[in-house]
Amino acid sequence: MNEKDHKRDLKQAWKEQERQRLLASVPIPLAELHNLFEYLDRKDAPACDDTLRETLTFLRSRGLEEPATVAWLNEHGGFCDCEVLANVENTFGPFL
Image 1 (spheres, rainbow, N blue to C red):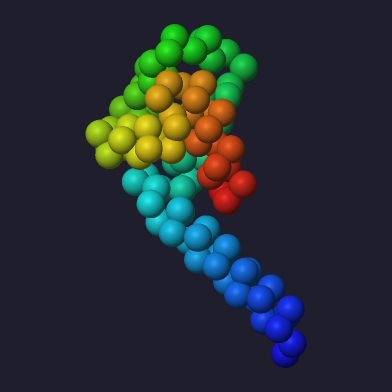
Image 2: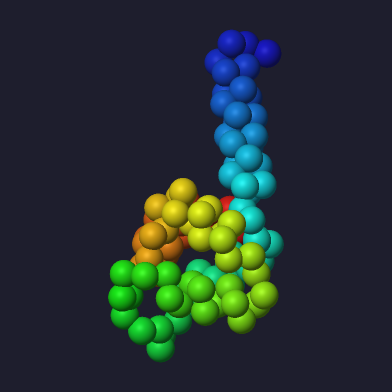
């Protein structure tokens, strides 16, 4: 294997390791994270009121851990419902 191929393989391995690290950090099941994105992006969703009101409604309706999930969403730029879609879904959505 030449050096170029070796570097490519190392880069791919690093990307996969980073992907796994990110996915492992999610405090709720990945399917529920996907469902949260779908819930927030529904046609009849109210306009964002600069809170996590809809996110909290979703978490409560599913019996999911609120404090850890809210802290995790904040860590990834989700400080309100629209930011959960704009920031968190942009980062994690492609992995789901």
